[in-house]
Length: 421
Ligand SMILES: Cc1cc2nc3c(=O)[nH]c(=O)nc-3n(C[C@H](O)[C@H](O)[C@H](O)COP(=O)(O)OP(=O)(O)OC[C@H]3O[C@@H](n4cnc5c(N)ncnc54)[C@H](O)[C@@H]3O)c2cc1C
Image 1: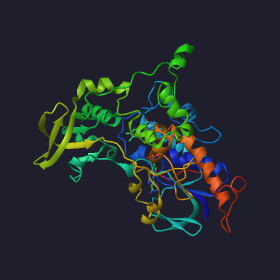
Image 2: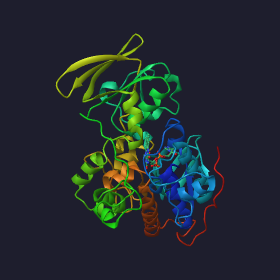
Image 3: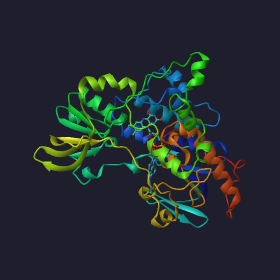
Image 4: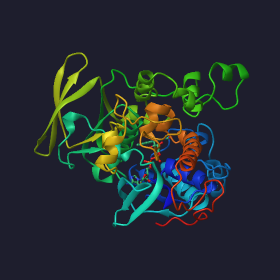
């Protein structure tokens, strides 16, 4: 019986595992490390978050992105975006150094079992643990607009289905969405010789400003402080005070989680898009149908206009919707016991524990509880330490006969060791 199973080896799962191992918990970590960054983003993308706001978290603060970059001879400076490939490699380095061995198998089922939980691996092994931290990231929550659902994947894909855009060379592609994933995907497509247009519901595309310099007069910092989510007091509150955010009325939290830091392109992608991409803001797809050579999209404009266009492929860069019912690796019985907010996301206690004792959640699915920082790597630092404290409290409050370790004093399940693959 393990103290803790961490399901997911992205920035959140790895950070939780690092804190849990340092606390002496007997744990296992599952998942392909940094899979979202290695398998679901095309080469050539950059992080939108600042390098100093893109750290995975270990209790000693030893394994930050700046330390990795210094070791590799890379630049990690304010206002210098980091390539996605470098960030994925940083995550693997973190996993090798700050986390017990990661088991790359996928967990296919988590159910409640005697004294805690039973998790089943893709090859059928059952493991038992007193607590589980689900850090499965964004992929279970892919959102495609209703008008585009049900079409064949040769015609419609989600932006996160692509790690290589090469097969769209010479084709005509329509990207749906007005956020960074849509705009950067469109720029990469145009630069490789794809005819590309972007359709966005908003009347105008939004672009983030070049961030203010790191060093600046104090009165400028007071007026608009830096924060892990961008400059300004509002962002500072979301980034630096997630525990206070949780005390806001539930309706406000859900509204802010859904709307704060809404779709916008990074300052450094603007020229690349405006130069080469056909931009159609203020348009919504109302229907889509397969036609010879591609598909036809029916569009409704915000001005009441109607039109159609034909394209060879649609990439829906339409984000993710964290809903309890999409946590399909939880058994129906366990999922059914999870209380949910009106927006469908799970109710969480102050330490990220769901309404099912011992089941903890991390990442995007916690944004309605702890705020927009949970949509970004930046939130992993607060999450990892707070969640592991909660796990330790849970283990102390519900001792299990024959438990194998005492949190905080027991032996580590394993010292940091190489990640496979
Ligand atoms: C295109 C794009 C660009 C982004 N850019 C930024 C950015 O610049 N800065 C930023 O802060 N955030 C960015 N984000 C958001 C980013 O996804 C999150 O900040 C971060 O990846 C969340 O980490 P995570 O650990 O919750 O999830 P993920 O990184 O998605 O990791 C989830 C992990 O769980 C594993 N897993 C899932 N299911 C199972 C299972 N059943 N069994 C075992 N393992 C499982 C996966 O293999 C994966 O390793 C971006 C997102 C997208 C889509």
